[in-house]
Image 1: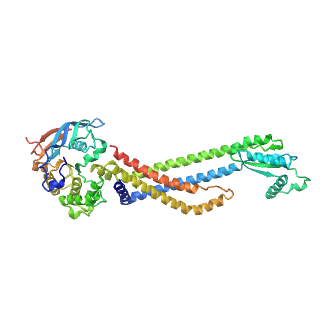
Image 2 (image 1 turned 60 degrees about the vertical axis):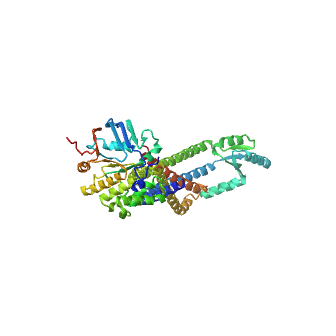
Image 3 (image 1 turned 45 degrees about the horizontal axis):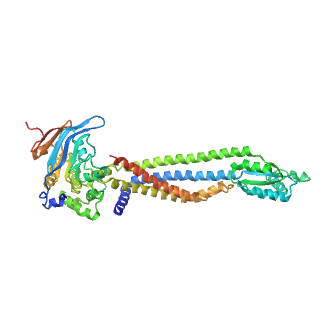
Length: 250
Length: 294
């Protein structure tokens, strides 16, 4: 069955014709680096379609490693990582790019190309994946409207505020119509007001049916939203509860 | 397929101009290296031409008995000419030998001693040019057998020494071009690598948004080809501009040597274009590879 596109979701035809299933499954995942360090140990996580998940924990707890496993930048030493039904250890190397198009990635440092305009940065994601040109224009215009950057389309990244740069990055992550957005500290470089704008945007995208997994240190945001929280410490999941706060409630 | 090639070429073109400084640095390095390589190549060819000129000077001189008849001499000449090792045969009569001797003496500013002679003491000779100087001994031995040959000037030792030197210079020349070629290879590949490394983030983003290896690799390969082609064309332009005055200077310098350099021009064009394009493509291919193997 063909999954509904972002356009379908925008027009309200979203969830009706699709059974719930997990977008991300990690089963008994252990990641040991060649130097012997165990970054993740016996991690079990299931993220159903449409979830909004905060990934919290101190630096070095394994958040980044977990995200690298999800985008298959690294392979798990033990256990199974499944994205949208594909076991990442079993897919062919040639198929990795196709899996990555199901995932939108957002970074703390935006990772925009400085010599390309906002519009070009977003279009770039489609161009380099071989999308026909006539499909690129409407797709880019649509996501720019969604993140509220239609007016800044012709500007270069360094002419934008931090929040606008991050919204550009989110637009780029969305343009492939991904099943899940993985955001690694997306508000880490932004002041609190702008951070809230970005969170609001992610919530809106989540309401459109896109699963969101966001790693963050922002206790205020996590506690205020009462979403699902997965806490990592020393490579293990020490807490996984819905409607939770940043710190354990005793 | 065609949209993909067009896409790659367009991206290569954009990549080249959006990183103009890096592209120019790579192109100029390419030009410098190609000029160096072409210079050594041309030098090597001049050297080879000079060596074969020296080797052409090797000839077998067989003196003919004074009582030999014209018929015998004619037979000897045609027999010698029929030998596969022989390039040409020249007959020097006794009178011609005397004339030449006089001319040499006069050229050296010496008194003409022949005027005190009552008769011509010189022998007629046949001077044999060889297709290959290493065949000297065979031809010498063959001529020595002939009854009308009085003696053959024995220059075997001298020729062997000349051959040792020319062989050495030839090998050294090839080795030199080889070494310069290797250096050029490393410098160009490294320069292109730098240009690619400067865009590591772009490659990283391409991977993360799900670009396939081909979509990442080919624009860079085309860009490398563009750098190579541009570098080669600039190099050929410089060589063309430089060939007129240089060539004139060389003709002046090598005045005495009628060198045969017929195909060097064409070979240089092929070498420069081939090396430029080849190394441009190879350099980018190798540089992008490091980012794709994961």
